[in-house]
Image (tube, one colour):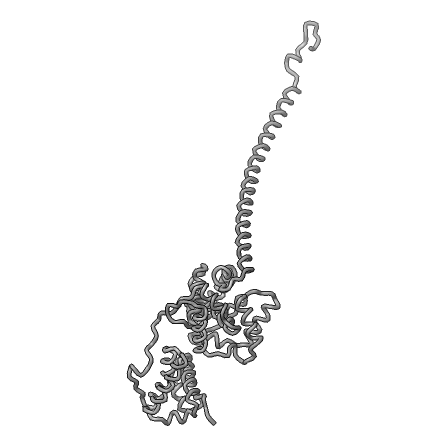
Amino acid sequence: MKKTKAEDNETVKEWLSEYAKPNTKKAMRQRLNRFMTWYNKPVEDFLALTAREAKHAIKKWVAHETAKGTTENTILSIVTAPRSLFEFLDKPIRFRRSELPNPQKGNKHHFSNGDLGKMFDVADLRGKAIITLGVSLGWAVSDVLALDRDNIETLIERAKQSNEKFVFFRSQRGKTGAQALGVLNPLAIEWVSKWLAKYKGENLFDISHDMINRELRRLTEEAQIKTIGNVTYHCFRAWTFSSLIKSGMSEYEAKYLVGKAIPLSDDTYLSLEESVKEKYKEKYDEFLNIHKTTIGKKTLALAEENKQQRKMIKVLLEKVENMEKGLSHVTTRLDLIETNVLGITRKRSETRAIPSKTHLKGNKNGEKI
C-alpha cells in the first residue's frame, strides 16, 4: 500500500524530534507530506535513494510545481524538508544556485477598496467567499484554511438566529501562537454561508494555498486591475491591517484582530476586545466594506445625516441648558428683590401702626387729640 503520509516512519519521527519548537516541527512535517504526496511512493523508497537520486526527484517536483504556478517562495520552503531529512541521513543534497527558483522580492500589490470590489464582482460563489473571508479576518492563508468548518457554520447560524450582523470569536495562530480576535462581517457571513450551503466537503474550502493565489491572480486579470507587485492572499492581510489603522484603531487593536503578536497580558486582551468590537462595527461601512450596494450607500448617507442631526440636537440642548441656568439666576435675583420689597413694606406698616407723641398730648381743654 502506498503511503503519502511520512510521519509514521520511525526514521522520519527521529528526524522530526530534532526540531525543538512545535511549530517548526509541524511545518517540516507538512512540507515533507506535501512532497511525498507528489512522489506517490512509500517513504521507505524515498529514504533508500542516494543523494543524487533524491536531488533528481526534487528537481522534477520543482518543475512540476513551477508549471502549476506555485510561487517561488513556497517551492523553496517545501524543498527544505526533504533536503533536511537527507542531511539527517548523512546524505546531503547540494544544489547550484541556478537549479532552484530565485526567492521573490518583498514587493506585493496593495489593493484598494475599488480593486477588491471589482474582484468581488467578477468572482464566482467560491471566489466571493474566499475574498470576503480574507478581508474580514485579515489572517494568513494557512490560518484561514485551518478553520473548522463546523465551528464557522455554528457561529454563522447563531448570528442569524439572534439577528447579529457581526460575529466575533477568539482564536490562536497555528504558526506563531499569537492571539487573534476573528471577525465575520456582514459580507463574509452572507457569502461564506451561501458557499457552505452549496459545498458539502469536510473543510471550509476545496482549494489549496497555491490554488487560492492562482485564483486571485486570475481574478485581478479578469477585473482588469493594473497590479504593481505580486498578488497573493497575503495582500488581503495587508489591506485589512492598513484599513483598521485608517479607521482610527490603535496598532495594538489592529494587530489583535489580524493575529499579529503583541506583548500583552490576558487581562489586556480582554480589555482590548470590547473596544475593538465597538470600533469595528462603527467603522465597518466607511473603511472595511468592499462592496457597498446602493442600499448600503443610502443607509450610510442616512446614518451620516442622523449623526449630524444628533450633533445639532446636542448643541440645542446645551443652549437650552445654559438658558435655564441663566433663568435660574434671574429667578434667584427676583426672589431676593421680592424679599427686600416685602421687608420694606412690613417696616412701613409697623411704623404707621405706632401713635406719635403729638397724638398722645392733650389740648388746652385737657382733651386728647
